[in-house]
Structure formats: C-alpha cells, structure tokens
Amino acid sequence: MKIGELAQRSGVGIDTVRYYERERLLPRAQRLASGYRVYDDNDLKRLRFVRRAKALGFTLPEIRDLLALSDH
Image (cartoon, rainbow, N blue to C red; front, side, top):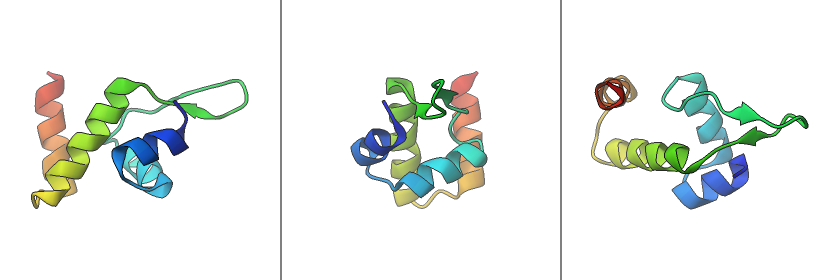
C-alpha cells in the first residue's frame, strides 16, 4: 500500500509516517521505480502499535525500546 493508504488505515497523518520512518520507529519503506513508498501489513501493525503506545503516554524513545525488544 502507498503512504496515503497507510496513513488513513492507521489513523495518523502522512507527515507523521515520514517522521516515524526518519526516527526509525518504522523501517525504511521499499520504493517503486516511480519513487513511491510501498508499505505492507507489518508496517501497518507497527504504526498502529506506535499510535496506541503514544496514546498511553509512552515517549518515542520508550516506544523505540519496546519495538527493539519485540524485534528480537
């Protein structure tokens, strides 16, 4: 899915998706030959997790640590 669909399905803005990617909360997206970012369902799940964790009061560094634990 493209960034707009990911943003809509996760409930965050497109700029937020880009920011989380820069901050390494989301892995770098694959790109099509046209340059568009392409995301999959794992990216959507991860973005929803970040959104829920922020709503619970976790900071971005804390969320990054939680994601690192779940990745290993």
